[in-house]
View 1 (cartoon, rainbow, N blue to C red):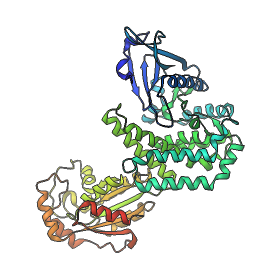
View 2 (cartoon, helix red, strand yellow):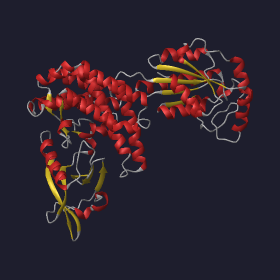
View 3 (cartoon, helix red, strand yellow):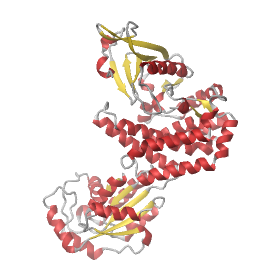
View 4 (cartoon, rainbow, N blue to C red):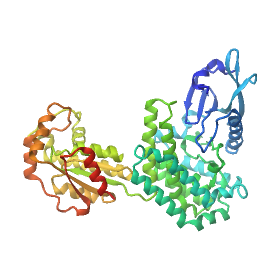
Length: 513
C-alpha cells in the first residue's frame, strides 16, 4: 500500500506547482496543486465502499467524473494516471500506471461553504442559489427502473440497520447506550408506521439518482453569482439513489449542526415552495436523523484511522458525538439533565465528573463557572468566609443563572448535562425545574457521614482540588440546607457516597429510565 502523502512532491506533477497541499479524508488523498486538484482513492473497504484494487479505483474515478459533471462539468477535467518511473512517481504519466486520480479545477477558497459558515457569513442569497440549482437538477436526473428500488422499505431499512450495526462498537465512546437504543427504536417505528408514505414517494417519482453527500463540505460559491455542488457519491449506488428528501435533509441537518437553524428552515421552505414537494416535510426529520447518524458514523471511522494525527482523531470523535446528539433530537429524544447536589465534601464533584464521563454528558461544575465569572483560574483558591466574597449570595445567584443558561443551550443541542453544585436552597432548584423543564431531570442527592466529610477535607490539602470549601463551610451549609421535599420521589436519587464511584454509578444508572 503506497502512502501518497509521502510519495508525491512538487516534482511529481508536470506543471511543478508552486504550492502543494494535502488534505486527507477517510477514503481519499486530495492534493491541492496551485489551480488544480488531484484526488486519489485510498485502497480501503468499509463494506459500503470497496477501493481495494487498482481496477476498482480506476472505475470509481471515472464514475466520479461522469456523475459530478451533471452538476459542474467545467470543474471535473478527467481521470489521469500516476506512473512509477525511474525518477519516482509522476502524475499524468501513462508510462507505467500504478494509480489513478481525478483531476479537477480548483474552486475559490474564499467561496467554500464551510469557510463561509465558519465566518458566520451565510445568507439567504447563498441558499437561493443552491435551491435554484437543485430544483431543476432533481427534475432532470434518472428515476424509474434501476432507481426506484432504492426507495423501497427494504432498502431504507437496510441503510439504517447498516448504520446501527457499524456503530455498535462505538456505544460508550461516541453515544451512550440509551441514545443508541432510542434512535434504533424510533427509526424502526417510523418506517413501520409510514410504509404507505414511502411507497407513495416511489409512485410519484421522488426516488432519484441524486447527490448522496449534499452538505457544506461539497458546496462552493463564486461571488454570489454561481454555486458549485461537487463530490457526489460515486462508490455506492444505494447511497446516491434515494428519496430527494434525503439529500435535502442532509444539507438542512448540516446547517443545524453549524448553528444556522433559521437558514436551515429557510432552505427547506424555499425548496418545498419551488419544487411543490409537500410530502418531503413528513420525511424531513426521519432523513435528518439518518444523515446525522451517517456523519456520526464517519466521524467514528475517522477517529480510528491511524493516517490522521491524534488531535484530528480526537476532533473527529468529538464531532461524531455532536452528530449523534442531533440524531437523538430529530428522533424525538429528550435530553437528560443530572443535577448532582449536596453539601460540600459529600463527594458530589467526584461523582458528577464520573457520571459525565460514563454518559458522555457535559459536566458543569459550579466551582469552575463561578471562577470564570470573576476571571480567575479554576485552580486559584479564594478561602472566603461563609457567604462572603465570591461566595456571597450575589455571586452565587450569578453562578446558578450562568450554569442554567449554559445547560439550556447545551440541552437544546441534544447533549445530556450534569450540573454539579450544592443547590442547598430550594429557590435555585425551582429555577432549574422551570427553565429546564423540557429535559428529563434527575436529582442525585449526595450525602456522607460527618467523619467521612471531615477526612476528605483533610486530604484535599495535598491535592489540586478546585473547591474552596472547608470543614467550617460544610457545617455552615448543613445548618442552612433546605431539604429537597419538592422533588418527585421518582426523580430523586439518594446516594450515600461511602462506596467506590463505580458502584455508585451502577446504582444511579439502574434508576434512570
